[in-house]
Image 1 (cartoon, rainbow, N blue to C red):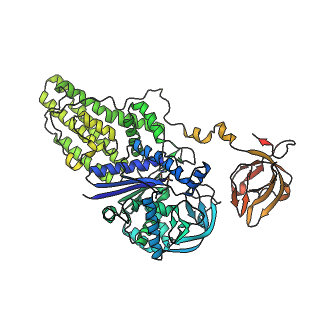
Image 2 (cartoon, rainbow, N blue to C red; image 1 turned 30 degrees about the vertical axis):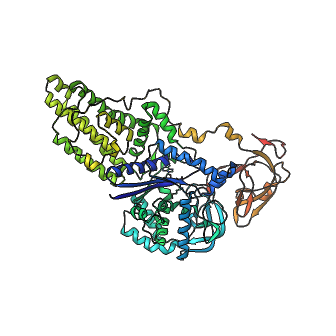
Image 3 (cartoon, helix red, strand yellow; image 1 turned 135 degrees about the horizontal axis):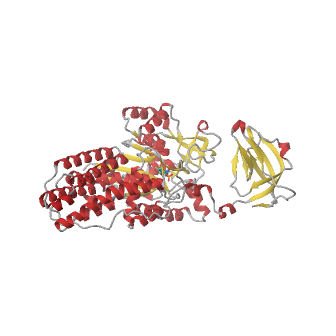
Length: 638
Ligand code: ME8
């Protein structure tokens, strides 16, 4: 049996699963189910990335040990995937001993080979994305990926000789244009390779949570190197050579486009250094957005897939069918690779047009005819060669699309076949045959129609597992449709006669016109805050005691501000182009006092001065907020 090994990213454990994460995982699940039905021996893995710095900090904030914290969270992810019918074969957590051993062993081997060396690192680091950036890539100290403020990191680190693999990778890319997909992502990576790779830091000395370097345990392995190695841990490296030889290299890593560089360049280079084969393909899909903005935790515009399924269950009356609705919509609506905006109206339209009308009605129209004319027993009928040819062509097209990970195309092909079946009923008009008393012709028509339903069950099974099984059972077919192999089953005329059909409850009933919205509007989540959130801000009146320039930072001033505390605060403000130090000294300002301190140009800034601003760069106008009358420093602003 040929193997097929596919993966999702392992998600940061302290994120909340949202529909973006569900997207990659559902796509992987459909692929895994499809490959199983094509007779492959599938290894499908997902999991959680647990060694990020933010995990350590979130645990500390809750007064929990990091270990207790991650153990509490791991279940949330598994629960979400179980609800969405994700059939993963392995769920890896990077804090498991089986993985930590692999990480230690891998870096030790690279060190012994001379591909890891000690050096001094300085550069920008995004705490949130765990990504490092060089000076040239950064503007205004903001992360190019997520827009958050970056930290300047300067420490002794170990480096990986990424540059050494530049040419081999470039050659590989040129020889294998299918290595990274879609093309736009391939071209981006090709350009990165052409402009030259620099060695990367692969350890941090300021952390404790993670895998220590075996040759210098004061250092912790950089979380991205640790995370990428999960893909060989689950494949058995290095202990289970038999398993590893069977499954490695991975056939495809499914990832979002923001982490393509890690998967298409850094990961293959690490493998080359270890003398291991590179993965066969990386597919970097697009983003789900709401009103054009990426769905993410930081923007607060997330949609919880579990909550969405609960709401959809109100429509379907069946939770498993509601899961199918979500799985269908998310893969049908947008071509895999492109970005897509999530709207309730498009979800509803797909539900009504594709699921209720095309799919649900097909079953609703067919089964009563068999009940009425043949007592619910599948009659003997002769295969219709025209319909058989349509079905065969649909199967070929669906397979081609799925082999290319074109999920939306595959569904379009299945729906075009459903269109043919619906047209077949209209043209053959079986109700007329009943009236005309032509039972043999009627038997032929109904047999072919039911055979079409059997094919439908098989074709939709990877996408809509519960609906497929309901179709299967309503035809009286035994066992699980998901276990049926397409090459054996998708032959026109295999539907046995004599089985008893049974009508299921309606699968996709029309939602009540008055039913409440499935998801709160994006803008109401993004732009409106509950009053409790505002109460979290500690705003105080301050008096500027001193203002001075900061060497080398033409926009910044260092202010010493009295906010009614025993010690005055040092606050760095980006107002030097608008105010001179003399204009500020003695002035009353408004200070956000409970902001986390930040290092700005080597000065620890403890608070923020509020100002109103309009325009950009040269045209920017800026005015400091102040208060009327005589209010002492420290007075609360609310
Ligand atoms: O990056 N649209 O984990 P993560 C589509 N731990 N997909 C989205 C999405 C959106 N709006 N938001 C998230 C990490 N995703 C690392 C990975 S792998 C060795 C380490 C999906 O929790 C998409 O697959 O930030 C994206 O790449 C992934 O979630 C990021 O998950």
